[in-house]
Image (cartoon, rainbow, N blue to C red; front, side, top):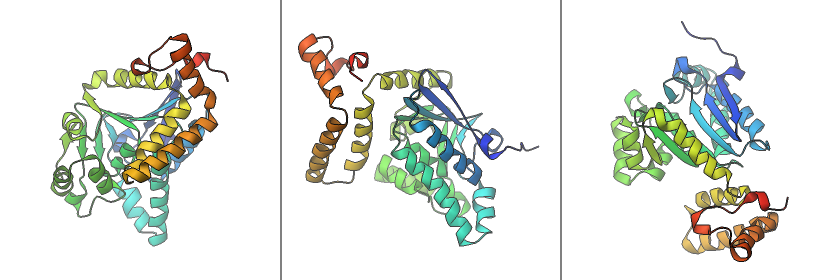
Length: 279
């Protein structure tokens, strides 16, 4: 028997030690993304983005899946029945929050605890870092039911994988486990499921020690320069650094002061002490 959930219940989150643990919450549907879930994800991202008690956002899933991709019944059949307008609205709602997540104010981590299929590659790529359970399953299953990997999934495969692996992954419709996903570059690391959350919490703790303005600038810079020539990237990064300095010049000064004057830290071995920075 299916579980009836309100729109607000399709996404759950808790905030602990400045980490927001956000979870797709349709475990009975393997966390398939429905229009309702997509709308609620937008609300949750809005709620958390500028909260002072949130420094890192982790995206995971309830139950045995991260997300099985788009809900075939609610996202495809039911929206297509409403015509082109219904389809375009559903696309705006899903692609919209993925885009928001790509340029989110806070560092983001995908914690892939189980299945990650099709449309799930959108939020997977949108997160800055990604960690998976060895047992997780990744797949572009679209080819198996007669469509191409759309919604950005083909772009994600081409961005993160080699040409030959991207072609094989998209054309064959075969799943790969977390270990293979890490080897191929879909995620940063893969580890046993019982160690996954502890590792993500460890990474989040390190991120919380960094200057948040510098983190946001770095996130944006890495995404932007991927599609630039070297000269254009060089110019962009000079301007981006100037903008970051003008917004938070005290942070830069404090890091240099602790290194040169206090000799209390070494840049190559960790972050400067944010607690000493002037507000």
